[in-house]
Image 1: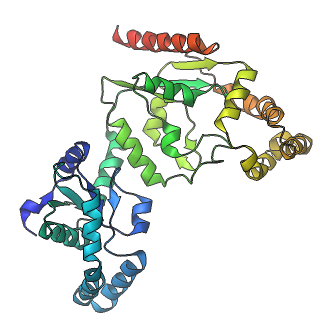
Image 2: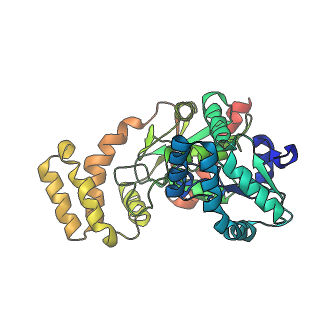
Length: 351
């Protein structure tokens, strides 16, 4: 392939930000594990076909494996080109195609797209190069300040961040990126979490919008969000600033929890296992009482029990010494107090 149809990662990411289409030519399983955010999957091989070609390569050599690859791909070419064409917006620059290391799969699809009149470039180094960039960023990259909202369970930190984002504040929704609400019941009613690599790629994509000298708001998290792990330097960054501590009454917090789990009756069976898992901490009598409330659909009473017996004792120690306390009730005044506290933190750093 000639030099003019390859592209370096840094240039490809600039084009992506400008609306260019990125095409991941790897198998569906590889794509599900990790990709460049925003890319679509147009697999040259299925998972089974890739395994077959790889086995043949080991047993009979490169030439025989390549011939098999040609036979497998040839009937698919019109469909692959149509799939890319349907997603491509003409005028947004060339299509950028990548595979794992910038090898045969992306080279072949790039060549056929260009033959079909769709300008395409092959990403040098493939997804492996992108993954290296993400890892390097979390190990030694720089970003701006992370101002952190904290508070007892149910104060509505996520909904506050969404409201602030709607008002133009820079926000990184860590739980949204992780696909988890960050508690023992945080996965209920949500799709499966992304893989660790997908989570890190999405987090990189958000953090790079917060260069040194800027800031973003985030929610205070433990090292784990569900089964995903925050990169160590990100977790450390969440501990650096004075916290914005949100106060709310128990009744308010119960209402927020009930609103955050809208399809409670449909999820009833899914609550049994996490409630039962609390037995070592709360004892059999308390868990039996909670399961009875669950079975009768007495949601408000159940949430109150969980807050008083489990969440509040568990998380009360997370109240940081360095904090600005904000009473969020009533909400309009509470939001104004929160915005004033954000301005106070920003002004203090500017002095």
